Image 1 (cartoon, rainbow, N blue to C red):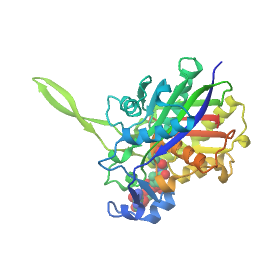
Image 2 (image 1 turned 180 degrees about the horizontal axis):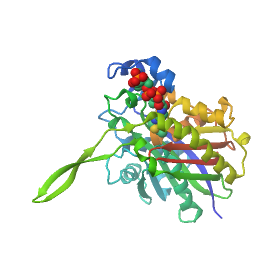
Image 3 (image 1 turned 135 degrees about the vertical axis):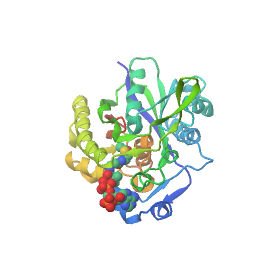
Image 4 (image 1 turned 120 degrees about the horizontal axis):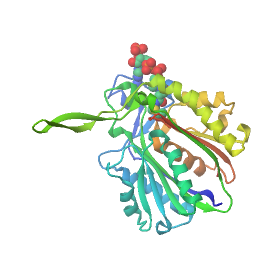
Length: 326
Ligand code: ACO
């Protein structure tokens, strides 16, 4: 069969830095509350001038350069996002921005699990021999959709983009994965269309309207993550025939430092193997795993041959894990 290797990574974040202290001008909160409960100290926020397309394209260009290919080598572009610039799809705009004229491009929506779901989706196209060079981007601008009067959610999120290039490879470096969904718990975390009935013609009221800002049951999400993430990683490890102590780096979706700590503790993974950049970025949804990976690669932490256990989890509810060799 055809193997898969991740051959490049890149990331980007908006220039604007908003620290916890500054958020006290927006809602009744404090640096102390936010940092002790979440580990977040600042986040990068997209301004009016920023776009998801631009952020994603910068991250993608870096990943393509590291992979040593050109945009015209790309066969497929998958954009994992819940905050597209255009609901009809944003991947095509990125394709144009990159000049990846051969690539097929589409969006994939799986909230904070988007990167892991995208990784597995990309891998299927490579394994079947259909495509050889795939660009996967995780990018979100949740600040557009946060309720900035709800202190329980608005302090948690930040904006950014991360990307990887996956290529067909003789040896398979994607060792195992497991994906899950549970729509019965959908109401824990939503960014839902809110229908405004509009009388279009006599007797026909269509739904017409907008999106309700993000709503979240924080305690339920916390419980879900701490229980389900270790399960799904263990399942992926089992499939990969890898033991927990062979993991070099645990890269979880950066939702909350307490979730990272609790998962690592449950799995008996020492803290020095846990990648965390929450303090600088907050929760960047689909972007958080590829940003964390890219930074760890740039810092020389993640090295060629290291075994990474990555897990995304969030709205849907959806969650998943992938075990791969860098
Ligand atoms: N500043 C100050 N006080 C606050 C803030 C804030 N930003 N937000 C809430 N509070 C107050 C509440 O009003 C409440 O006050 P009260 O006791 O007087 O009513 C008190 O702090 C406790 O609030 P809780 O919501 O019960 O706080 P909790 O201990 O559950 O912590 C948190 C909230 C951090 C969100 C936690 O539930 C959590 O980590 N959940 C995980 C959810 C998560 O990470 N979501 C990210 C998005 S989903 C994803 O990416 C998977």
